[in-house]
Image (cartoon, rainbow, N blue to C red; front, side, top):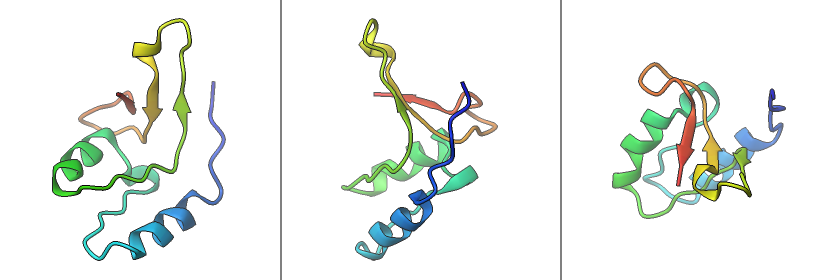
Length: 79
């Protein structure tokens, strides 16, 4: 099913990023799996303002929902 946009997510991202001078803020279509995975090794803190899907019957398939990108077109990050 289509997920509704999170109206305040961009504002939340900017407010949190302002607390960390070296922050990498990924928002909207820039928040792809590839961009997140590339940024993660450079930071100690990750703040996620977005959708997730919890699959109770198969918890290993629960995931964060990200923007779709060319390298990872599914826009899904399992944890």
